[in-house]
Image 1 (tube, rainbow, N blue to C red):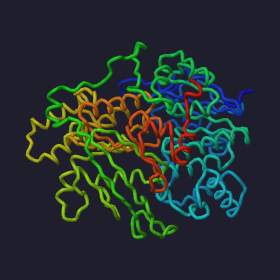
Image 2 (image 1 turned 180 degrees about the vertical axis):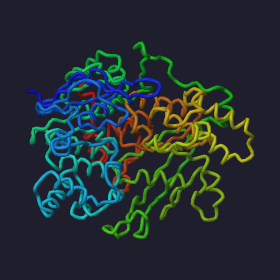
Image 3 (image 1 turned 90 degrees about the vertical axis):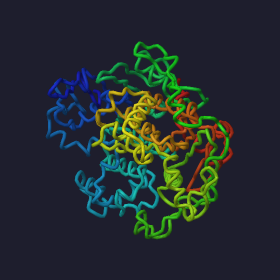
Image 4 (image 1 turned 180 degrees about the horizontal axis):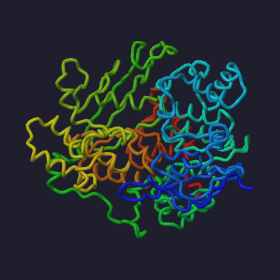
Length: 565
């Protein structure tokens, strides 16, 4: 008998205008000791099907047909059974660790409560088990960190806590919804190895929902490909990735950033299944003229000289368990030349985002010098200079969902920085600039009168790029700009950034834990560890001839889809 059986599952959402099918006639099974992956673009129904297994479909959603059986027990419309097995027999790792943990309770309290709810362990025994679980998922000093609150952990750390919660009651089935999205490559490797280990040692069944095809390639036994709520293809992972049959699967595989070579552009498929040959954005002469100079000078734009940043015990980042000063970056130096794409890579806590915030003047360095176009950004005598350069340095943030004001229409979101940095500009010119910017990122002008929630993640990220370009910056800092996007949308956004850089001579600092993306996007790369520079070199040299042992380790741990395709 199959461990998990999903048969002919229909899930629909009734709106005032229409009925939306989140899943239609979905059928698959899972055996103990097996890991299956569910992939597809955003909105394909992956998470909805997973939520249906544990009866977490929010109204107005409803399961209208089908069967869900676990060990022969019907779960659909069986609240008593679901209540008894949710958390105990089925563990769930949600996509967003920040919303999965209660911010008002210590990690200890949340782990112990979960363990005691589903076991006969006393408080001390549950506490000991909690510490061991944190250690098992790779959290250092678990005896101390267990007394921390969720906000005192990084995103990757919170995800590990969520995984600890999911396995705390030794479930038979684990459903992991994007479990590695917020994790750097080394932690991702540890988590995936842990899941594979649990599968063997505890004879679990695991469902992994992800847009990372590298994770699928190296972790899963079988894969299910979904589109618009329908399974378009399923089978053994090796067969699906090496010989995709459906258009959707071919599109996903083609969009994966290769790890073994650098390419000029990501391949995109038309709805008819043909490769789009001319997918690049072509800017009009008027846009290029209004932008200013687009000539490559090869001069030094950013000079980061022996910079350190220390967060002291009086800072908002300090904790009672870590009263000593925290050195986020330590004597870091690098150069970024005008017109190049420069990568920053490293594990969570390596200092990447701290560097970005310093360059953006969001925080001040503790020591060292930062020069922008040979002018010091943090010279006390040059306060006017810092304000002057704010418009020339812009950021594209990691989360396209929270970085846009939900109460503003798109036209107001894009217009806001124009009004701020160009005080004397008229409404007609603002409107023309907004139209030009939405054209630049490849979206229709009709979208300007809509709100952020009406767009997909990829479209929101395009809007974020348009907003960042509104001040006509010389430097664009992209902090994990594609981590929340599925692989096909990621390819479109990365192609867009390549086009904009080449035509507008943008300088880009690209921060990412996705090493294949770094290889495709960056001319040179700096590798960071614990706030220090390990090496800086041409990106191709980093990948082909890494010098530092830490760099070699990161590359070894990187998921490689080429092993299959």
